[in-house]
Length: 115
Image (tube, rainbow, N blue to C red; front, side):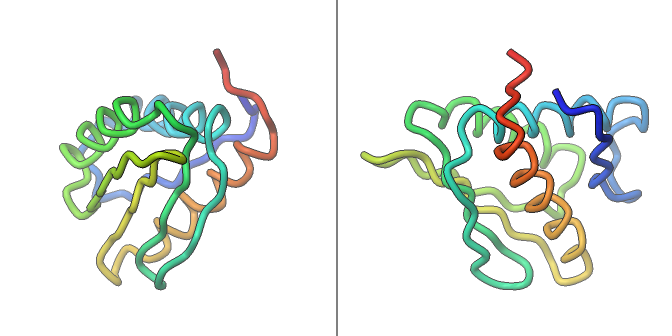
């Protein structure tokens, strides 16, 4: 786990403040262990390419995230070559996506999965 605090959760998130770093760390572990790449499809959407076999973990994390940050939209597609986690947000939250993409790339590049 990186020692850097991520802090991409917006203030409108209903997850208790003390739990936000833990959720961010769950995303960091997923990205560190399986992120293959990120493609920005627009200012408010991105596709996170994950290793095969990570769909269940991505779906669980996405479901829990949308329960507290309803502005997120996740579409998890499991294919032959891997999993794509498509993430989109409304324009008012474009900065959240930018921070999530940056966090994902740092986690992948660190190679630390926390497992």
